[in-house]
Length: 277
Image (cartoon, rainbow, N blue to C red; front, side, top):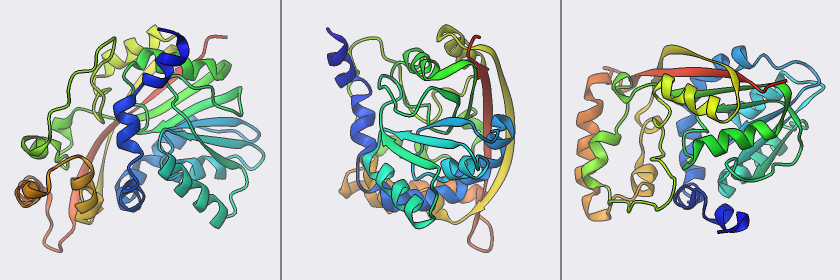
């Protein structure tokens, strides 16, 4: 199989999932929770004026704009596999007159992303969905200058994230057929094991890999964790939505507050790595 054919097949299931237009309505609610970690990403990345930064899995652009604010004389390019979310991010950039942030629809596992070479690459929960993470991390490295930095945030183990409803929804989800070839399961917790993820990064050629775990509590409304659009977008049949809603209610009962909000404990880790000089 030639390179172009492999590129066309890479992350095919994720490509379909993230190009569902319902993400545009769901995303702003989800950001209320995930934005709690942006300051940690920025502290580790430590962007300097004049730098060019690549942000992977940029979604609606929240972290991209935060990085851009730290780069008054530099720029940041957000890359995401989702055309609807890139359109949302571009609209926000126009509305906020953020001139030093741009967005491109691209798969960081295999595509060449314009704007490089970059001084650093970053990601806020955007690198856990690659079928071949070694190839993806190597491709990211190819976009970064020698001695450049790679900083990303990913989740710790699901058991440490009591807001997670995926286990409660599992009985209602359709089975996904196995994908032939050298792929591995994708998903938000695919990089939760720090030792395994360190090995993946080293296999991709990164050096000086370090991970730092954190926990914060985000007080949010229920729809920041799960909402009607997300229940439908993950593939729950309409006839089982009521059962799924009840399963979610039971799962979240332990973090519910008397005022109707939820205290979601977020256990995540920040990885730092360097491209060899």
